[in-house]
Length: 145
Image (tube, rainbow, N blue to C red):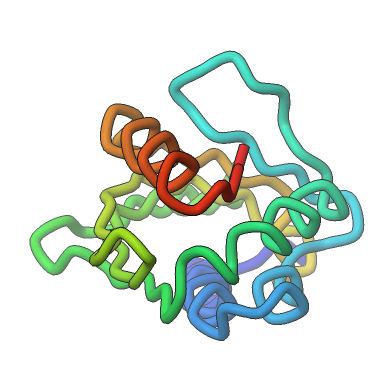
C-alpha cells in the first residue's frame, strides 16, 4: 500500500529531525540504501548515501549546531501519487566565520513503504553558499566541496 499524506508528512518531519541530530549517522538514518541527494542549482552529480556521508564528515566539524526548520509562511506541497514532499526550510549554524544561515527548497521522494527517503533534491542559495565555502576555506583551510 502506498504511503498516505499523513505518512509522507511524518517522514518529511523525520527527515528534518534526522538532519537536526547533526551527526553523520543521524542525518543518514532516514535515507534508504539507494537514496541519492542532488544539490541545485549547479551541475554536480547526485551523491549516493555513502558519498553524502563523506561530505558530512567534512562539513559537520566546520558548521556546528546546524539546524533546519520549516518556514511557517510556506505550506508544504505533498504529492501522494508521486510520494513527494516539497518543503521551504531555513538553516542556522555556527562556524569559525560566525553564523551560518541559509535557505532551501527540499523535494524529497519517500520510499514505497513510507519509512525512508529515496531521493533528495536540494535547492539552496548558491551565491551565499559559494561565498561562505570560499571564505571558510581562506580562513581555516577547510574545503567542504
